[in-house]
Picture 1: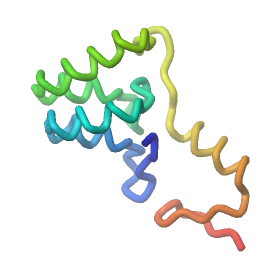
Picture 2: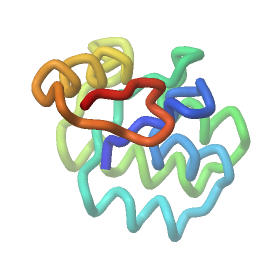
Picture 3: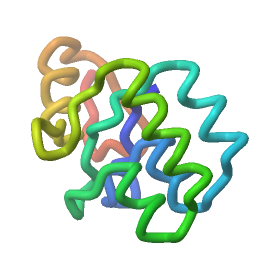
Picture 4: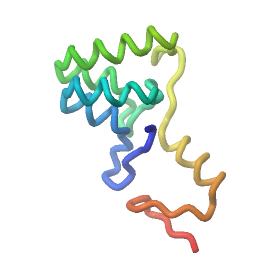
Length: 106
């Protein structure tokens, strides 16, 4: 659920993309899988910040509720940069090949 889109260079998770487009139904479905809420995209923006900046208050409210339910940290207390998570994943599975990841391994 914390997959990062490396093909476009924006490093956005599915929740980032949903926050950008403002689909509350999709956000609710994604949040059931408990994605990391503090992932920052390539521009340093969390899904909550993206929803708020685009005026999608219904999506922002869902993300805030998920943060409260989980006791999740706010951006001020800690964020996760997707590229660091991708590097950790790649180090753990060197034979993994992902489409669009700009990396090929045999």
